[in-house]
Length: 309
Length: 283
Image (cartoon, rainbow over all chains, first blue to last red; front, side, top):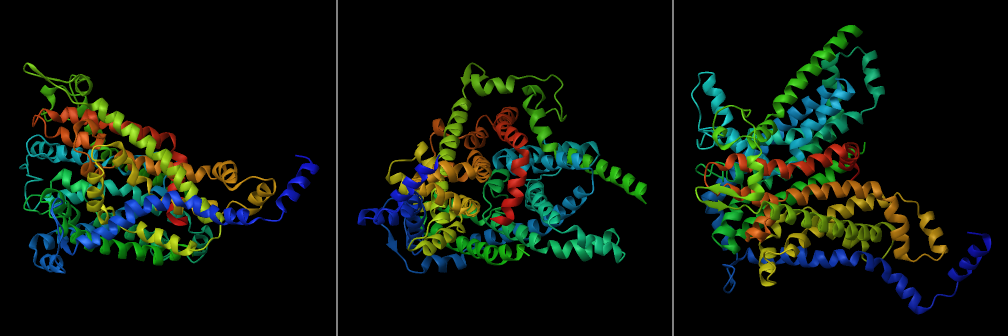
């Protein structure tokens, strides 16, 4: 482009703006965000509004919608299955976030101390479950846990121990699910924590060395406190993920035995899509959304700002 | 001291390698199972003694059971998943980039309100919209269609958020210069902003690919017809056939469904892991 062209373009640009021109200029940004907001309105806002409305009503999906007021929520407070699902989900969330995050931290720290090439291969291996379909993971573990021909029982029998009904015993089903969830989440969490570890400046470790820290005191007094924002991030995202848990337990156990592994999301699905009580299911959805919204909000306000120290 | 450290490092490396091998065991089981003939499925041994491709052949040529042939439309599941994933990716990247550009490079009335509205719904789970969306799609008679599988996923506030953060780092001078040269808003978007946002678009593409390819709940709600199943639904429904002999077959189906994802991760390993770790904090 030569000088003359630029000049002529400049003059064109400085032509007095007509009304049409300025209107077009003002509407441009809206044109860019419009496709999203149209989809947003149709597939998000309206359904959410309808969901909230339905939570105060009774509807089987076909006939008329009958307004009930707060009855769905009152029923929920007295619904043993709802409380059971809440308890199961809470247990899963508590156990998986605490044990999962601890193991992931340990793994991330250990991986930082081995040869780089080996570490990067290992990281890919540990990351595989995070990208594998939960359906695939669920069925593999279902076979491993199978009572008659599963891997765990044939291993137990070879050691001369009695086989277990992993997924059919009300005492064992939840632990079996927890083991699978911890296994599946380890790589993802430890990767995020690795990123956190690398953002700790070397100078701090060097200063620590001058003060005579060894491996353990270094971890306890330097690494862990500085890793806190990262750990908080992993915890909060884990909480959000786990409150919405659906596919993994529904494939592994179907919620059984005796609803010992039925999460809130599974109960919601059952109430809505199996029994067609859409009003009550919406009320459960509202409560679940509130729990998850609060967790997300905490994540957004608190963790994100903390992470930028 | 140094030598002791090195030996310790080797020991640790060996330990982690062993642990990784155990960790991989479910994948080893899946692969081994997929190569077993029916007679060995319940043998109690992990590896097949007479490996065969039978379980894979059945996915495409059907299943001889006494004198009937059961067909599993696995090819159709695969095709459906590819169609849905590809169209979703194209649409979501295009619309996300447009909206992100609108938010990153323009000032307009209501910008703040609209942005926060978007962020607020980003925090809501799919359960908040599941039932009304199902109802909406059944009224539109869109149950069992690609449209139903694709469209709700195209509304992706998270992607817009990610891209907006990235686009804000593109210098305004560059865009102003193009404007002076007479480039309209869309041309500035398409010829400057999009090419410069390629790393962020790549990260987003990988995330969306994984999400759509592996999605289970939404297809489960919206698809009833066997011929419209995606891979995840297809694999989940194989369980219902024939009770027992299905193990090997299901694992063969799982191996083939996991392969594209595995290749993607291995090929894009660097960008992917970097994008992930950066995205976690910048986002």
